[in-house]
Length: 262
Image 1 (cartoon, rainbow, N blue to C red):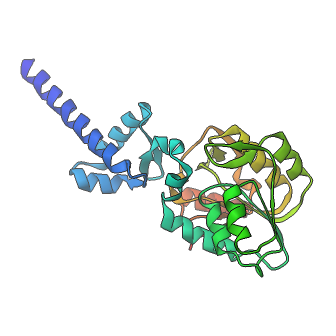
Image 2: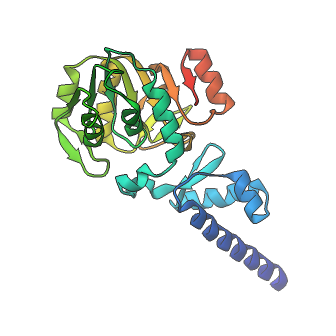
Image 3: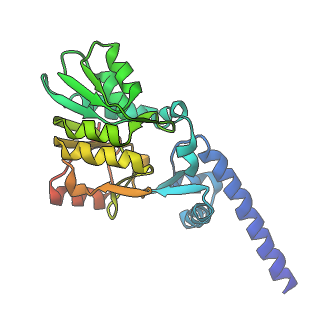
């Protein structure tokens, strides 16, 4: 009995140390896959999944499709979040910007992925851009692109304009295309976000747009944030940096949602 207890204690200590190292790896803000962690620590993927499950229950990390990401990303500054998955976000922004036709009016949601769309736009590629992001408005102003910045309450965490004033302004507009960000995407919950005020802006922009494009990096797959704002059949296109899993691909194919991957 004593020997068994000592062995069990050793295993727990080993798991605890491994979980600390996993947390250190995830602290960079990038998604890490289960198979990568399995190779790093020389244990099975099932062991890694148990580690991640325990860490998720403690609020330290959150699972994504096939991997994990640190859970407190939402508490980082906008500048810090802008650097997460940056190469993938740039690719998403470039392909999203290429969809816009000359003379169109578009809505670009606030976010660290959507700002990349603004960086690839030119004065000839769009008529008017409406946004609730001061950062996006500044990007477009430097290019002399016609821009309407919604009024409203400034949300400090995301530097976005939200609330009744922004919502009312948005209801009086109509768009050829909308580009919407999200902090979570799953087959069951659809597109979700961690802030209820931003959710209302997203919902109205979707209602006022002829075509709805959702732009998310692949770390959002499998994540269910605070509240859903649209089901998958409520959008026209999903633009992401890596190919989704077969379940998502099949669902999108069944309901006619295009998937664009750079």
